[in-house]
Length: 149
Ligand SMILES: [Zn+2]
Image (cartoon, rainbow, N blue to C red; front, side):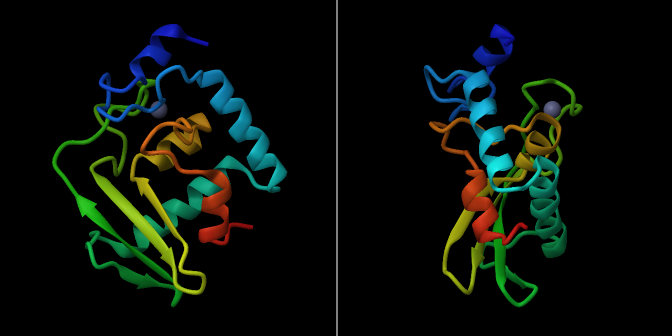
């Protein structure tokens, strides 16, 4: 695995919180999450599609959220700027990387928080951010909260 890529993912490099925590190995994170997604009987694309669907459904994100499909409260905050993809393939910024979002499942109360750029990272790189990253989107939690099947 590319050492330069891994270094750029450390806290304080491309993002202050880091795509990976200190001492985390990109290869390990990718391998373990891939295993989890397969175990769930899902694909990375399915997970990315589901998150993208909810982002599209709310339009402009509001802090108080908007109810989608009568079941998912989806909201968030928009800020200036955005996030460059560590792999360098998404142009200047990853799509939707200027929003932080949440989805709360109204039946279970369980909530998923995620940065908008995660759709690109999951779809193109099968990457959910490091287990020690503050931006991580756990695939198991995502599948449960968003009812991905
Ligand atoms: Zn990318």
